[in-house]
Image (cartoon, rainbow, N blue to C red; front, side, top):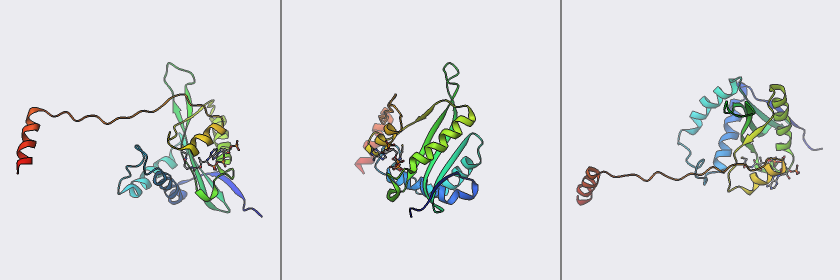
Length: 176
Ligand SMILES: CC(C)(COP(=O)(O)OP(=O)(O)OC[C@H]1O[C@@H](n2cnc3c(N)ncnc32)[C@H](O)[C@@H]1OP(=O)(O)O)[C@@H](O)C(=O)NCCC(=O)NCCS
């Protein structure tokens, strides 16, 4: 018999599995230009940050469990929009991760069902998210779940400008 899958809202008592799954997501994207620069003390920082998120009333973290073992995670945040635009608030989805051996078995589907219920209960009519443009897996999953692409995130480093003093200092340093 297939072990039972259940999704529930995480509490502060779940901080350890929340840290494990969210760091696993970041580690999977270790070559990504935004998510790859993981700090050496990320785990320590993660406990503090996720404990804060777990106790916030504006958001929820959902855990998918198969026979009590955490296999997937999703964060939803009640987010204000521009005061000039409709809708006033929307649900921002982030930190979605399913353990590799559990993929393509409906775990994301099950977490989305909970996220939809959370949105309905809070009167939110729209969901938004970012996904890595390099991940065909994420793109395939979000398209299958009805999310259309409406924007792109671009980045580029800022070119460091050197003043005359800096050039001189460099020349002196290089001459040593
Ligand atoms: C993306 C991810 C969360 C999908 O989770 P999952 O539990 O495997 O998804 P499900 O089995 O519930 O599938 C949901 C839908 O997405 C589709 N899908 C899932 N993985 C897919 C893939 N690699 N390529 C194409 N479609 C995919 C499924 O076919 C399904 O569509 P259907 O309803 O038409 O059948 C999981 O692959 C993952 O954790 N990836 C690594 C982390 C990541 O990229 N997270 C997203 C960050 S934005």
